[in-house]
Amino acid sequence: MATFFLSDVHLSETRQGIVDTFLSFLGHGIHDSDTLYILGDLFDLWLGDDDARYPHLPVVDALRNMTQRGVSIGILPGNHDFLLGKTFQKRTGCRLLPDPGIIDLYGRRVLITHGDTLCTLDTSYQKYRKQTRNALYQRIFLALSMKQRLEKVASIRSASRVAVRNKPAHILDVDNRAVERMMVTYGVRYLIHGHTHRSAIHRNSLRGDTATRIVLGDWYERDNNSVLVWEKDGFQLVTV
Image 1 (cartoon, rainbow, N blue to C red):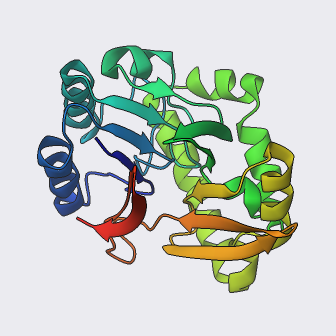
Image 2 (image 1 turned 180 degrees about the horizontal axis):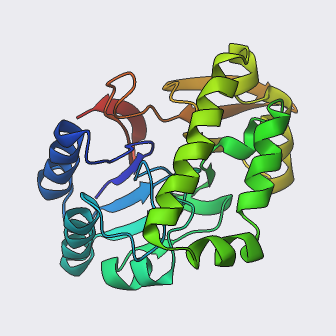
C-alpha cells in the first residue's frame, strides 16, 4: 500500500500527450489499496462543473473508475481549477480537501497545500487570489455563459503572462518565512506542496528540529511528470 502525490498536471486539449500519460498512470500505476492526493492544477482550466470541454469528461470518468475500485483520491483545487465543486466531487467520488490540510502518513502528521498562498512576496497575485476565492465573485462568474467565461479568462491570462515576465524569479517562488510560519502554526515537520513547478526536497532547521518540505514538479513545462511516492519505510520523488 502506497500514497501518491502529484500536482500541476495542467490537463488541456492542447497537451494530448500529457492527457494520455496521466490516464495511463491512473490505469496502471496505482493499485486498488493505494491513496492518491492531487495538490492542485490537475486541469489547466476548469470553468465550473458544467465545463465539458475535452479532456474533462474522460478524466472525470477515469477518476470515477479509480474510486469505484477502492482507491481513495483527495484533491486540493489549485489556481487554475479552483472552481472544482460539489458536482465534480459527486461524479468522481473524489474528496475536495481544504487548503491547507493535515493528513496522517504512517504515523507522521503532514501538511499539504497547493502552495500559492506561500508566495507572499507576489502581492498582486495574492490580491487576485483573494478576489477569485470570494463566494460572490464565483457566483457571478458561474452565472455567465461558457463563451463569456472563456473570454474573461483569456483576458485575465493575457495580462497575467505580461505581469509574470516582469517579475523576478524569487517573487514567483515561496517565501521561506511564510513556509516557516505555516509549519509552526500547524505544528508539523513535513510539508508537501506544488504550484512553483520546482521539484525538490528541502530540509531545514525549524525551531531546533529538522523540517522537510517536498515540492512537487509539473507535468508539462519542465516535462517532469513528477510524483511523490510515500510508503511506510520512506518516500521518494519519481517520474512516470
